[in-house]
Image 1 (spheres, rainbow, N blue to C red):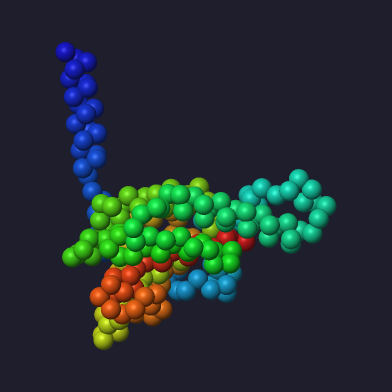
Image 2: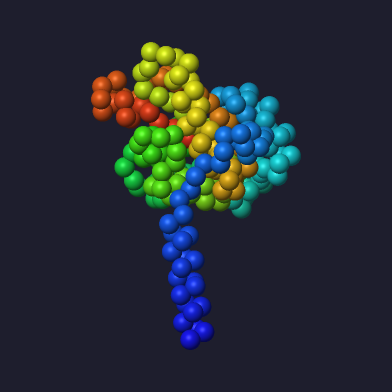
Amino acid sequence: MRWFNLSCLFFLIAAVSACTQYRTPARNTWPQHLAGASFTDMTEMARVAKRPVYLGAGGRLVTNIAPTNTAAEYGDKTANDNAATLNYMANLEYALYDGLRKPGISVQRAGTDVVVILVRDAIMELDVAEVSATGANTLDIIAKILKKYDATFIEIAGYTDAMRDQKAAGALSLDMAQRVAVFFATHGITPARMFIAARGAARPIAAQDDIGRLTNRRVELRIAPAR
C-alpha cells in the first residue's frame, strides 16, 4: 500500500509539473532579472565596451575554450584562433538547427555569427503579450544550447510589422525582446551576455501583406563569439 501511495504521489507531481505553464515574471521585476544586460545594438564597439562586464560576471572567451589543432602553437595564432572560433560557432549552429526544426523558426549563418529568427506567433500567445507553451519549449531548447556554448554574446532584437504609430511599434518590439531576455535570464543565461534592442518596423523580411506581416513580427537572436 505504501508503494502504491508513493507511486501515486510521484505521478501527481509529474502531472502537475507537465501542466505548469511558464509565465513571464511581473514587469516591475524585469530590471532585476536583466541587470547587466545592455539596451543597445550589438555592434563591435559595444561588445568591446561590454567585455569587462562580461568577464567580471564569469564569462569566457571562445579562443580560450574552443579546441585547436595540436600544432597550433607552431602556427599563426590569429589564423588558429579564427579557425577555432569558426568551428565553435559551426557546432553551435548545428545544435540550434537540429533542436529547432519547427514552423516559424529558422537558423542562419552571418559570417562568424549565428542568427535565429523566431516569428512571434511561434513563441507567443496569439492575443496576449505572453510566451506560449510551445514558445516556452522552444526558448528552453535555445537556453540549454546557449548554456553549453556560453562563450558568446547574444543580441535579442524585437521587430513588428509596419505600423503608423512608431512609438507603439517600438514599445511592442521592446516588450517582445525583453520577454525573451527575461525567459533566458530565468533559465540560467547571464544577462551580462545580452544586448536587447527594439527595432519596431525596421528591416522587414517579408512583404507587408497579411501573410508577410506575420513574418515581420518576430524576435531575432544574433549570437556572436566572445573574443
